[in-house]
Image (cartoon, rainbow, N blue to C red; front, side, top):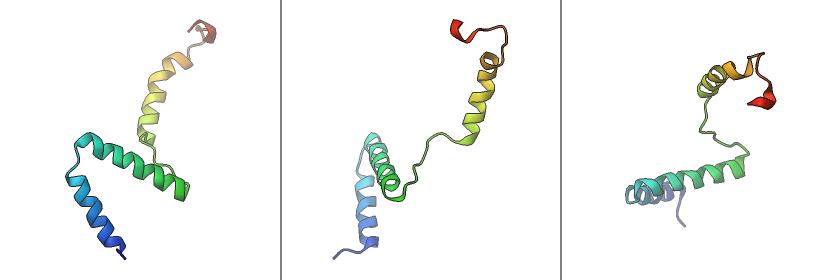
Length: 71
């Protein structure tokens, strides 16, 4: 029976031989498995980027002269 450390070594070996796009696909799958079994999903969006988005959209949101239906 293979122990966890051996699996990690085998996974690292696979990663070393994959094209970059497939490494990203493998990461997506690993993140899916983690979310499925831990109930925690990793988001590629962090709090800082959300704040930047909100700041840039304030021009639209906080404009009393604009009717939301005209946007």
